[in-house]
Image (cartoon, rainbow, N blue to C red; front, side):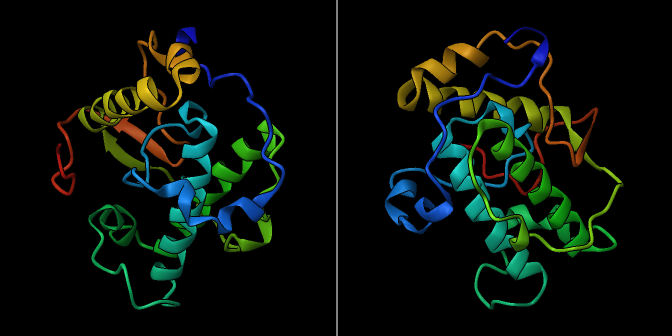
Length: 172
């Protein structure tokens, strides 16, 4: 994956119905990645979709749990958090479509922002290294596709800026 391009498509998931299976998340900490969703394996992309849908519910006041999740801070700080998370979800949906997956676009809020949120390059590097360590064990083929990336692409909602790992990050 030279030049930071998104990885090639993998075998399509049959449908979003797999999202109802909580076992797909077992044994891994799910997160709202700052990285481009193209770096994720199929398990990671499905988990990200689920996590972001839950985040959307939190940010639109449709659930009481999960309100203090540290990764929601950057969305809460945005002038219209619901638009930011909708834009975040839309890019995940686009990646799923590129791979031939069938995620339900109707679950995404109708108003999206076109403005990007700053993310520190240190945060991107940290997440990329963490993702690589996960993929090396869970999805060696995907790991090999992204291991040589030099310039890390952020999720399309984010704009890279100089800086360290975010304060909200729970460094492992």
